[in-house]
Image 1: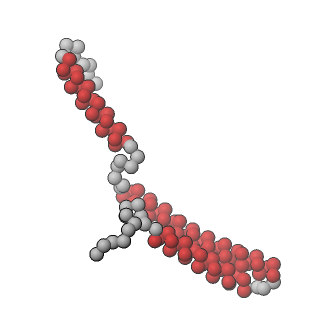
Image 2: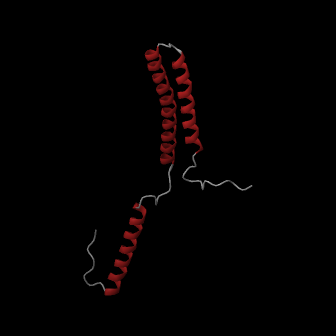
Image 3: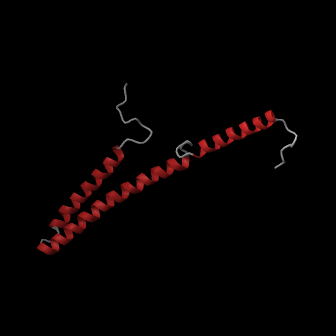
Length: 116
């Protein structure tokens, strides 16, 4: 970077100072969270996050239902009946959770019904 001219006039220095202030202001606005548009990487990350959440909700419902049914069968001695019943209940709960996740409005939509 070159040194400023020591013989520069006051108006030239004020003009340089003004351009420097505007450059700093533009740089600060670009660094604010949410100021930049959502890129493909962020959209892909959001979609993958939703997909992994749906998969874990579904698997968690089935596994929890199967575990509760298995333990109930061992305790009561009613071998596969509670296992099957609670596995079905867990599967229904998992699908319900995935449905609720999928029907939630995204951040880009206004959430209202579309007018035709």
